Length: 192
Image (tube, rainbow, N blue to C red):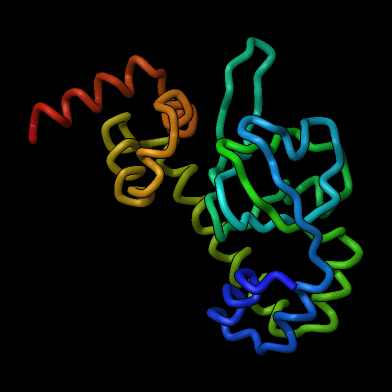
């Protein structure tokens, strides 16, 4: 049904029949640039896989500042975990950074798949563990790294995103002002 997604799953040792079963319950959707998949206040009811393009999870403060928590480029997963697990209103938005193709599963369907396909449960546990480690590293960086260190870490971890993201989004993700990010980038270019 979704052969590219099924091939993705095979890379994680899911057998053909498991990949086909997971794919068979997926629905597809196209998002335009800047289109919201979910807004703060809504309940997250879907697991989402980004086939192509890029999504972001972000919050907008009362004074209009945007804080980006995560970028999800193609072949990445995205959802508001707290809202999805507890079925409570989300505190964040999920929107397309660029035109994107996604697959999504209703919560009941995905939970059924986790029972039917043990390999999917193992894969999901590995994703959760990886996300916990990534979140811990982000918190430590936010608490103790300089703007220069934050930017260098971003460059090291996400080199392919640099040319796809506006500088204001990178600054928002790093928790620095656009002016500070421009200063850091300029200083880095002077050293080269």
